[in-house]
Structures are given as C-alpha cells and as structure tokens.
Image (cartoon, rainbow, N blue to C red):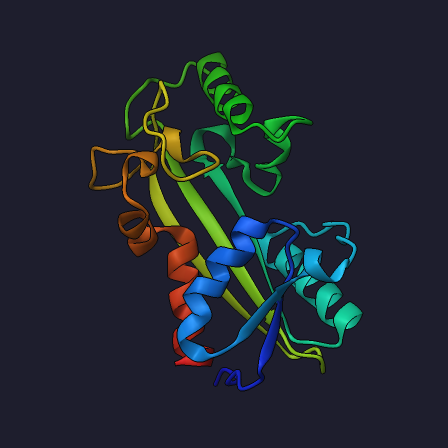
Length: 204
C-alpha cells in the first residue's frame, strides 16, 4: 500500500522552471504548494545510478535531505532497441554540451545508419521511460514508472513538445509526439502515465 501524501508543500528536484511549472499544474487540484530545487538554491547531485529508478531516487533523497521537505524527482530517457537500448540513461548527454536535442536526434539517426538499420517502424522500435520518485523527510520512498512505445522516424517532424519528440512516433499513430497538442501528448506520454500512477496511489 502506497503512502498517502498529506503535506502542504513539495520540492520538485529540478532547476528547470518549465518542468516545475508543469508539475505544479498537474498537482494543483490537490492544494500542494510547489517549490523547485532551483528556487531553494539546492545543488544538483551527481546522477551515478545505473537505472532510471536509481537516478530518480538519488535526486529525490538529495532534495529532501537538503530542504527538510518532501521531494519529487524524475528521471527519463529514450531507449532505442536497435542501439542496444541507448541512449537510455544518457539521453541528455547525447545532446552534447549545449543540451541541444537536435544534436541528439541526429546522433541517433547516424548510429542507426551506421548499423544499417532499415527505416521501418518494426526495425526502429523505441521506448520513452519516466520514473518518478516521491520522497518524504523520513526517507520513505515511492517509485512510479511510465513508458511510451513507438519508433524513431527521420527527418524530425513537428514543433510541439520538447527534447526528442520530433523523431518519436507513438505506436498506433502516424504523428510524432511533437505534432500532437499538449493534451494529446500528456494523455499517452511516459511522464503522463507515471504521474497518473503517482496521483492514484498517493494523491487521489
């Protein structure tokens, strides 16, 4: 049985204002005040884990220990099956020092071509992952894992979303996630699914 969240304030373990705002919107029905790690000036811990669960846990526990408040962290990435499930944990690293997703998408395409992977949905299977870690000040932890299956397409299409969305086409759709509205994407996305699991278990 998951622990119910009944506290008035929650730290989101991110320095990304957009992500903190997105989470605040999702949790607004529950009357929880959201503050980000960036707002509190908390340092970002080294993400030394070897799984999404481990890195999300590292970030959530670091934020709750530094703030004395409950904390929510996420770790997410794109796993391309024909690339031995890379970039996976290192999805952001594939974007280069400028953190430009265009660079990462191009690298995925170059790696697939180098391996002579045909440009078909069945050959270019990929999965988006998102793990949410919700930590309390006593270091109790709840983990939630959401996924979205699809395939890599080239060239990138669409201007919505962020990150690798323009090159990812969900199963059962002819559009990339960057060609969907925010509401359509959130209804099926890896992050949306993880959030719904968390809300049902801890907030609902």
